[in-house]
Image 1 (tube, one colour):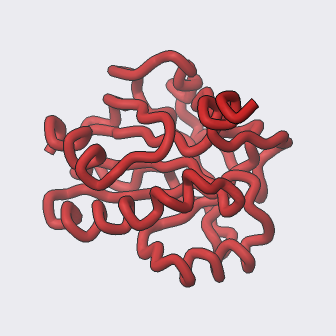
Image 2 (cartoon, rainbow, N blue to C red):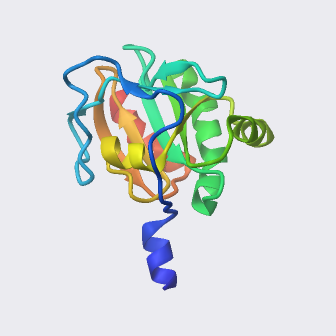
Image 3 (cartoon, one colour):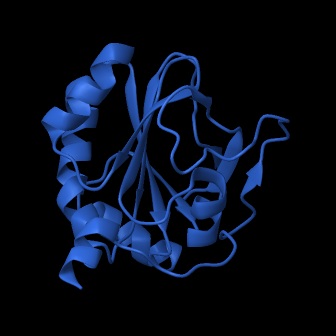
Length: 174
């Protein structure tokens, strides 16, 4: 049983996303297949932020975007948060932007308090588990996507990673 927990990470049942997540009207909003790791265009999707405003997953064409699916209740995710904060600090000037997607993590107010308590100074968006599964093949947490400057998903990292591992994953795309 412990092996199952370690292999799967954190999982949860889910429904539809909070707010009005949507595809941004693009025909290329196909899901990123679960087993796919490279060269898949990032779908043009938007999710609500902590204030309920819809935000695109990728804000700029000139940035490498690190999209991290996580949850407040996921222990491996909690271990990874300081690594992502450090990644943003160390590589922000290189054009790297971290975006967290809180999956099934409670009310926006509770998530906002969690974000402040953990020093998460990057954008956090809200999603239901079913939405993450449907669009990105997320069946356990944490999952991190490395998106290059052209908007192509270049790496899919499953499970918690260190700052050094994240830095190595983004390096070819800087």
